[in-house]
Length: 159
Image (cartoon, rainbow, N blue to C red; front, side, top):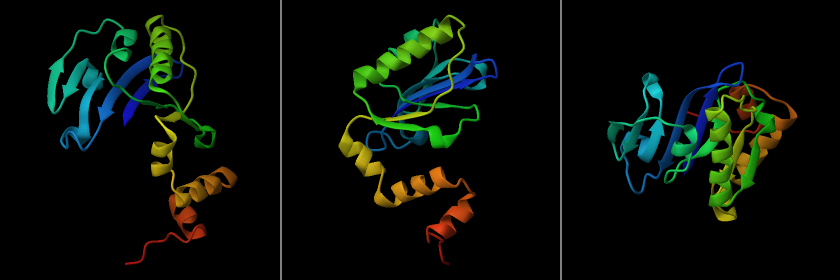
């Protein structure tokens, strides 16, 4: 899984980022993050199979064009009913990331959005099962708490 998360403040300025290539088949530690960059705790650093090293931060664009990074999410309240789920080629995924990175580097506000991108239809269908589609449809029709959704969809766990 490729993950790209950019947290923005109320004016659309980036204050934190997290980019990562996640694959539990390659590396099980560090939440299966094989490779990634982030700015947690106020410093820029790179993860590689559990090893963390400080990196010199020059620009988001430079980081976003490095080897495998990630999907995109925002730490701003975004209506999840407006999440876009799509199949997107890897080159288009990184092009989109570079455009966002250039905007961040220039101090431009980053428009709020929520996109979940899959490399191919097979990957999408592996994650988006029939029961999950029903759940998404229900949330789209009438947003509710997890417990209410579970009851409506007969997915209450019995103990």
